[in-house]
Length: 97
Image 1 (cartoon, rainbow, N blue to C red):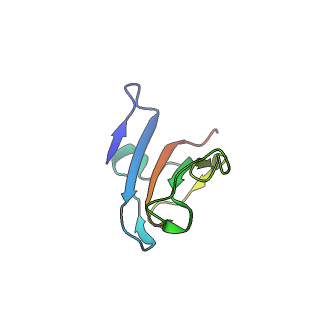
Image 2 (image 1 turned 180 degrees about the vertical axis):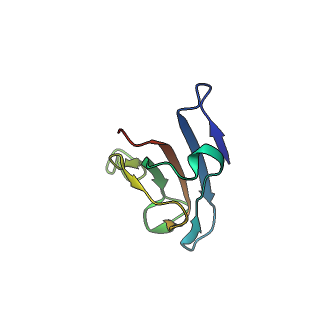
Image 3 (image 1 turned 90 degrees about the vertical axis):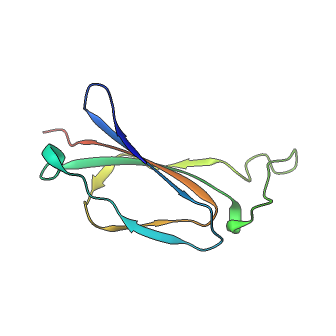
């Protein structure tokens, strides 16, 4: 699922991989975004090792947590990997000039 912010400066793409296998897909934007230099911040919430029963506990409080990347150049059409049992959020914006 993808949506643009109300001011049109950010496109958010959400990808859910509910399977026990890694998945891949390419993300490409259209319109004025197609030829723009872009950056993306990627946040991933994934079950460790793809274990659907994984949960946080007192002994392991960070077993399941969001892992985020710093903003980095985003290459349209390049396949991205989505871990098993995960939710990935890409926040894509135009690169600073």
